[in-house]
Each structure stands twice: as structure tokens, then as C-alpha cells.
Image (cartoon, rainbow, N blue to C red; front, side, top):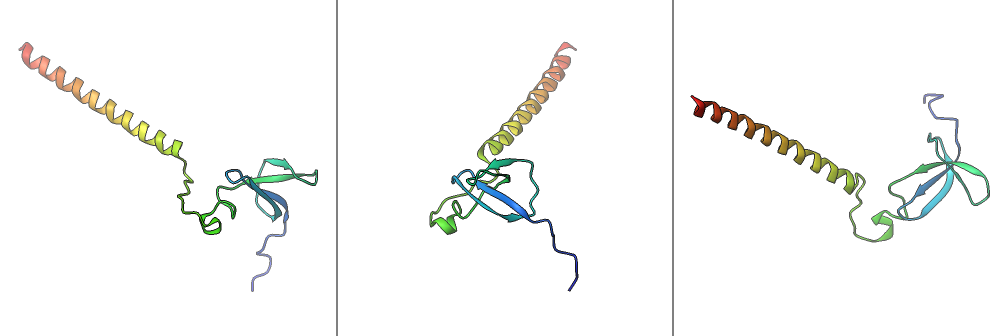
Length: 106
């Protein structure tokens, strides 16, 4: 077995699932810049998670879709694609009109 491959810098960290309103304090090597004041009055590093045992359908027994990417992000991507398509069609129509005007002027 290789030696010195496991991290040694474990420290107390709070993991928080804001959707479920659930947080827990544990030891981890996760890096973060956020902090939170915990129930014992001390301040700990904070890691936000999208899914925890309090919100995952396997543990809650609910059948629901967990949307990690986010509805707003998906909407913005569709809106941007539609705007680019609209611009491309407008440019194509302008070129066709210009070509038709040149032909009619002759």
C-alpha cells in the first residue's frame, strides 16, 4: 500500500442543504471561503450542497426530479439560442432584400 496518499488536514466543516433547511457538522478536507456560526457559537467553514439525505428522493421516499442545473440557467440558454437564431434570420432576410432590390434596379 502506498504511504502518504491520504489527506491529513481534516477540520470541522458545516455542510448545508438550503433547499431542505438541513445542515450538519462533520470533519472534512473540503476547501471553501464561506463561514457560518454554528449552534455551539463557534464559526466554521461552510460548504453548500445541492442534495443531502434530507432532500434526496431515496432517503425521503418522495418521487421528484432534482434539478441541479437550474431552471433559470436552462431558460437563459434557450433564450440566448432563440435570439441568435432570430438575428441570423433577420440578417438573411436583409441580404435577400438587398439582392432583390439590386435586380429590380437593373
